[in-house]
Length: 87
Figure 1 (tube, rainbow, N blue to C red):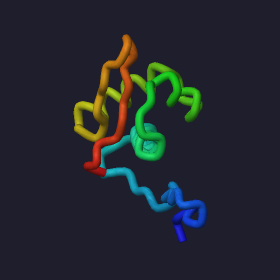
Figure 2: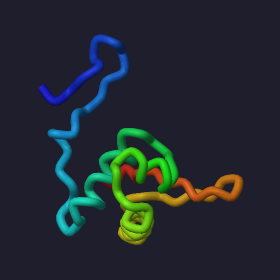
Figure 3: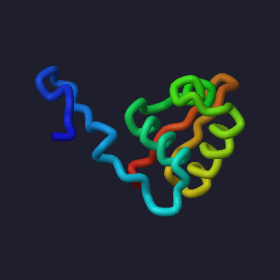
Figure 4: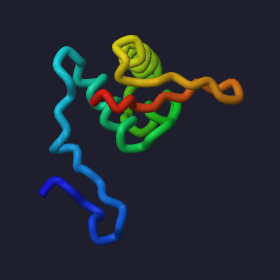
């Protein structure tokens, strides 16, 4: 229960098993979950994926970075984020 893709060799943990760390807003928790699942992405892609406004995503990603839940990487003029293994 809570896992998918086991037979395909690409195991995935389903969102229902993810509890956002205390103190995060629901939006921050959602973004952290997606970062954990996707790996590395930019704010624009996360906004499209989640349906959140770009400004909301930007603020939440910056806070996740400040709290050390997300790592910020600059590559070719684009800021990318990925979840740290802290979660």
